[in-house]
Amino acid sequence: MMPEQSMRIYLAECSLHAEVLGEALIDAKAWASLLPGIVIEKKMLRILDQVAYRFAKLQDSMGEKVMPLILELAQEPISANATFVEKLNRLERIGAIPSAEEWKKFRIVRNALAHDYPDEPELRASAINLFLEGAANLIALYQDVKAYIDAHFPEVNEISKEKIT
Image (cartoon, rainbow, N blue to C red; front, side, top):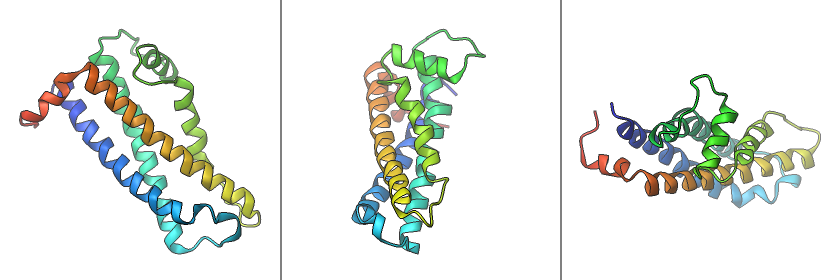
């Protein structure tokens, strides 16, 4: 399969994750500002689970598939054993992402929900709000990356006219 075809498939995958994540964030905003004083109910927990799952899927798909393929399509020579940080720095240098540091912050955001603070509602609310804000930022970053791909690799969009096998 050609890299352009792979990118088209990866972008479709990321778009789905971003869309569902965005819908879950809309649902979460209805009660997120009330967090310090409320008990997390099952409905809220389901929404948080959905946000966490789609956040992880979008971050993984971008980091493991889309970003390395951008470097390949851009014909940016980088060592096969380069670290992910080196790849991020290269992506920032070519303008594919606004900031390598921003991507690194998503690891902190992803871990925000790992800790439960049952006896400290303010800490729990802060962690949830940090996570929800980070999820919105990840969607925005995906949109930036997608715009970069659209602008620099128009052949990726042309692939949609062909049958992808």
